[in-house]
Amino acid sequence: MEPTSTSPTPKALSVSQLNQRAKQTLERDVGEVWVEGELSNVSRPASGHIYFTLKDDRAQIRCALFRQRARFVAAPMRDGDQVKLRGRVSLFEPRGDYQLIAEAVQAAGLGELLAAFERLKAQLESEGVFANTRPLPFPPRKILILSSATGAAIRDVLAVLAARWPLADVTLIPVPVQGAEAAPAMISALGLLNRQARLDPEQDVVLITRGGGSLEDLWAFNNEHLARAIFHSRLPVMSAVGHEVDVTLADFAADMRAPTPSAAAERLVPDQHALKRQLAQAEQRLHRSMQARLERDSQRLDTLRARLRHPDEQLARQRQHLTTLHQRLTRAMQQTLAQQKAQAAQLTRRLASQDMARLHRAESERISSLQRRLASAMQRMLEARQARLHSAARELNAVSPLAVLGRGYAIAQDEQGQVIRRAEDTQPGQLLKLRLGEGRLNVEVKRRYKKH
Image (cartoon, rainbow, N blue to C red; front, top):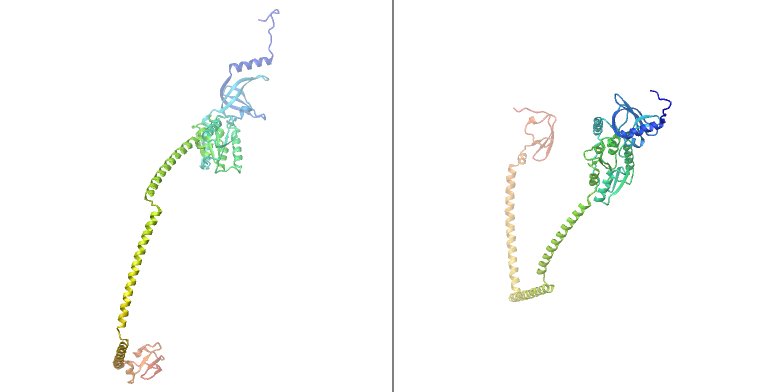
């Protein structure tokens, strides 16, 4: 039914007002939602924002992921990827486009991420990237922490370090721990630390840490290049990423893994309270040991003091002993002198009673008699020995071959002096020597005659 000319004309809205109302209605009534779909038409202009379309098999919606949030997204964001978005439904007023402003993006299929994680883990393990087991210095001279400067993890680590070991020299190197920029930033920081000549692998340690989160939140720590950088680090590295159940490739590549950031701080430094208790116990043991030693030494000193005599007493005993020895020596010398005097007197008396002239004549006569007896005995012995020698010479001459030679026989010898007994032992032309009773002859064999 058409309005009559008398009906009032309704007030019209401008296009801007209409789009504004629609935007307010969408943002108020729908608000923040989670939406799952497939990415398409992904665009990354120089501004750093990401524009794309999220679709399923029956519908699609335009989406925008602004730069401030895009830097925290670990998902690769490629056409055809299945993702989940958390965002606000809104409307782009200049064009009247209905859109979704994304706040977070994560891969919809966690199974794909886990499969990619397992494949990369197996590859790096086969290459030996997980072989680091260097001992960490304890306590370290410097603790170099790669983490977010505003996260709960760094607050926990610093609190534990301050409580356990206030002497720790801690340096925080702020790096993003989530999103596409996290892994490159940590690799760059780790490389910078390893180029510091003042840092010593024997005294300093690097801690890479962050708090817990989803697999997507921790995905930066599954970066292949980060794992290789940790493996090649000159400085030893401890990794403490997420909660105890969270495991990343950075944990495998590090020299040591801690289940939580707080546990990492506990493992890096000793507990001052435990050390104080140990020192107190050691002090008590030392005090008891010293007390027991003093008591033993005091008792030993009392025993020695009881056995100790004054030096005057010892000197008096020595003087008495010396006096006794002197008296004994004096008596012995007097007795020996008296005995020698008596013996000398006796010898003098015996000598005086002897007639020396008579004794000399008697001894002279005895010596002359002995000389005559010796000369007679020597003459008889010489005659007897000469007679035995003549007899032996006659017997020897009787058996000597030379005696045979004297009767006209001869002894034939070859050039070597061997006696020739048979004609067969010679050869014609051989030179022989003949020994006669008187003299020798050199002869030559002309001919041999056989024995008849």
